[in-house]
Length: 451
Image 1 (cartoon, rainbow, N blue to C red):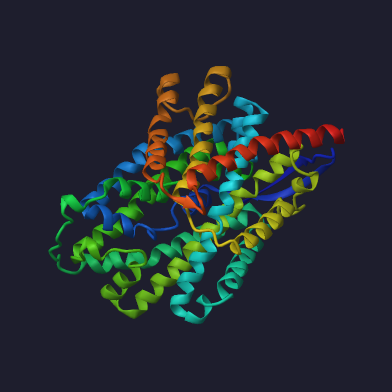
Image 2 (cartoon, one colour):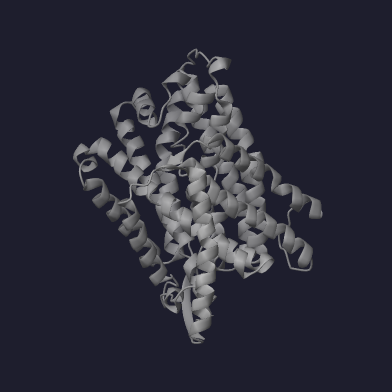
């Protein structure tokens, strides 16, 4: 797991050349970082069991990766190995569809980050408040959340290699309580469990929650330029991560089913109660600590991902050149990391809750653009070296995006009644999407005037 040090020469936007001695992300580190960007452990699966029962939950968690995760992972494997550039999906869409759509891809991703990144410090604080209740009251959640972002920002300032190494630690640590639950349950006699009545099942609701818990495979692409041998590492990392996520989702649920806990008893946060029932208060505390580590690890890994987009935009003239600056020793985009970190701290004051409709709209549209880029590049650049290629030729590349697109449309229809203030979340999201067109035009005008 030792990160490889490689000296590289990078040309900045002002034409100067900087030698960077960076620690590259290795295969185990990329697997761990991807795991955190996507899953962060089985936390958040509770409602799937409550809505779909044990049998339904296990089927959903086994089938959803086939139609949602694997297509995205295969797409990321091909494009990251063919175009291992900083900015990842932004670079793919720009090359395939032109600068306008590339900018929209970056806009959608950064906009979604404002909503997404507020949730992880909040989750950390919620878990911490179960141990120290005073930290969950008054202004303390904002203070604690800001400190969490500051810590994860500091880790990212040490470079991609440091984040990769910490991701391995976070992944192993947060999964330890679940490993103990599985081990303890295996030695206990099986208890009968009453499955949920068919009339009370909400399978589509369970599928939507599973989509959340299997979402984010493309986030790892933005650091492709900092990965050791990306043409080989990405296909392996995506495959291992998909299997790891599925196993760490299904096995703990099977263990709890073995204990005979009724599906109706499952609700958000019930893992701590399960741990207490299996091994006592000490494992309950360990499970709560695992939730805190999960929030920390996911936040740190996603900072690694999102902060590689502004430097790519700066290189293309959409942002001031200062955003492209990198630390001479670590290679970290320092200005981007600090500015994004401050922005996410300010977002905590807005009190954003995770709106499924809004997040799925922003993420879903960006994901569809990536599948379109895969197909267009197959047509326009058939000779592009592709160390890994999605099987099935042009037809395979075309069909690959059908499953994720269908699920995104179903999710938008299912949650069409979510609201942001006086308007629907869908309407609000479309306004934000349209804002990307206006910002693109404004940025082009500014660039022209500065030339």
